Image 1: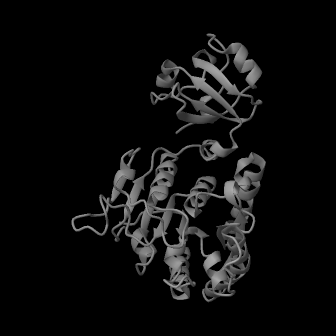
Image 2 (image 1 turned 180 degrees about the vertical axis):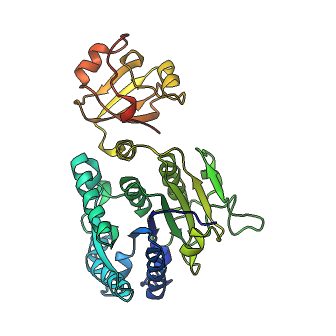
Image 3 (image 1 turned 120 degrees about the vertical axis):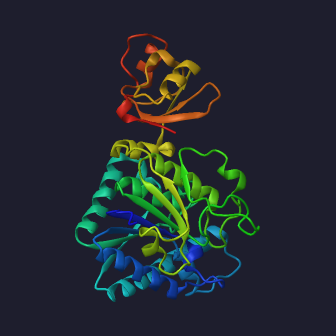
Length: 358
């Protein structure tokens, strides 16, 4: 059974394209490119989110132990990104395909204008049959500017481009119902809705060369699936995994997508770090908002405006226990919100069309 996708984002982790000695696995990279070329020949648009710059840098230069971890990462990424994109370009060229380097930071997603500018860039590449190869700009992304890892970045790109599916390639077959090393554990092949207990049996260890682990992958996968995009976690070290996955012939984990959300809601969903204001709701308002019905956020349910914001800002909506309920675009500023707090028959602070519930 073919899955019938027209546009996919493929994320490949460091643990897939890095050898045990920390150097790039060019055989694996070539095989990945061969698979993408096959998919492209079927008329499917592909965006590749690839880690591996630091590993590529490690193959080119020896670093003294005197340098700290951040500057070492910057050095290796700066040198290695050139080699990584050249490796991809060489392998794609063998298929008469062009690829383009797109380096981003978290800042690029915070501002709506920036966000749309990047979206336009990626769309023009796709329109010209160019494969975007996206990676975090590790040269300037340090500490608070960093994504959790490239899984988070891939989720943002999939949401931004309204992809049909996000395929995350790791070095395991998917999410297991226990320790993969223990006999009797097996891959959970389908996950739907919010599964709060997944973290209880997912291995918390991170991959040897990447920043994220399977908990991160499952969290991002659930978020992206809620936005209406199917997410697959599969083993990138398995031969022909992409072709087999698209034919539904390989054991892996699939997160079943909810109803497709609007482009604006997809942006809002990933904008928690860009939020300025915070408003607190009473339990009654929370119950109404999370009832599953199309409901806007009205001032009557607000019990506190915790920080200032202007009209058009992203705001966090929290409950009485300070837990995040959702994010939204404010229809007016904090001053008016404070004036109207607790009052009936007032204009919605966040309209349903610009409200994302987490």
